[in-house]
Length: 130
Image 1 (cartoon, one colour):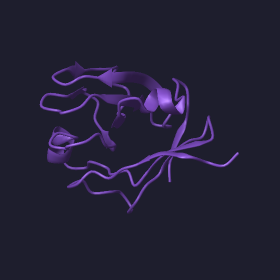
Image 2 (image 1 turned 180 degrees about the vertical axis):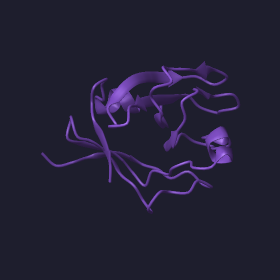
Image 3 (image 1 turned 135 degrees about the horizontal axis):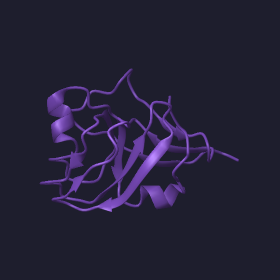
């Protein structure tokens, strides 16, 4: 089965880790995204996708939750453990909300609303960043 990429996205202002990264769902054998940026600084993490005009992807690490105050679009979120196994999924998180999870998980992938259902991603799936 040929791999299909669900989206190609890059957020302005964020610094990709090791250049362009792809996210692959190893459990499903699908390529979820190409050119995903990584928020590394506190400012990049705090701003996340705020200020973006259209939905995009972003990966970062935090244990304390996220907010969508000021965001112009809903997002899906995948929360992963240290082995990049999906532990928590939140779909269609609307603007002006908080989202918290068990602090033992720190890997967060924010993505355009509809991505989770569109790719069939489920709790327990293992992702890989290439």
